[in-house]
Length: 346
Ligand code: PBG
Image (cartoon, rainbow, N blue to C red; front, side, top):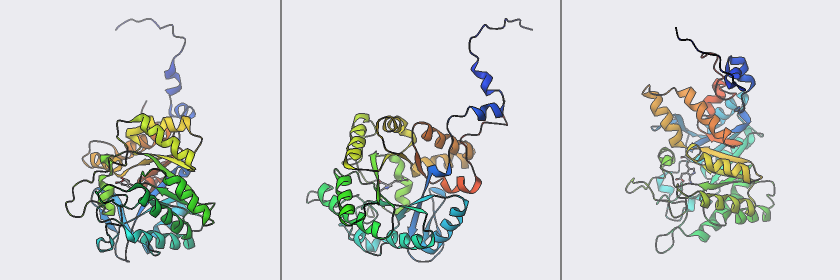
């Protein structure tokens, strides 16, 4: 047997990790139902839920089934949903004309939800990519570039239509310059002073949006090759540019600032939370969801544990709210409180 001497230590941090109860007592970050927003994909008609191959447990749903699901989850504690449309390709054109139709899928879903669940918080994405045949978030100018100011004018109109349909929070996800101020002005001018703006402020040109683009069908319909959005979304290597975008949106009148994706950009979330006096939202995007699922399906990672570790880390870095496709699972199975304080390990 080795002999050893008892160390003379002023601090023994392991003291507070000894039992599950002690660990729970000193846990710093806990996930709550109030923190979660569930993204929902809306599809036409009243058929069966359509599975999304790259996103297990996520479906495109027709409106009657959305109502049913939201009613069920609302009883269990769901607070907020974000609506995304799967637009039929024959309704798409290069101008995204369908976005200003009074009966878009999103607006119809919003009106139905508003009646069924008056207190459910409704968020709608404002961007043109579900509606354009080329899949870009805006309209193109003559040289094929996304035309900033022409796009902003459309987004501002979309914002008013969303507010008319009962949406509580509009969420521009397009990354055009100056859109927050313009959307705010249009909302106010049309009397919607209470409609809030959740700005996708630091949205990076990320490869993790792939499964989402499958879900809403915003891949380029001709080639199915990835769309290059780098002329408007941020370069993943640029931190100071992300700061600039966050501060601009705060100044333009956003009510929430969003960082997206979430887990690869915890430094940006931390910065936003330390420097802006607004609620900070993080979007755990489709690819972040799918990579955890894929590894879990192979038996390489534990789904529940990685889900909670990921969401807890996002919250710990300073996010007040998280958009996540895991919200439904968390609400159904009551995975709250943050990563388990681990009764099972010692
Ligand atoms: C569209 C939009 C995207 C996402 C949300 N809104 C995709 C994109 O910018 O290409 C991604 C969400 C996800 O991946 O879960 N403007």
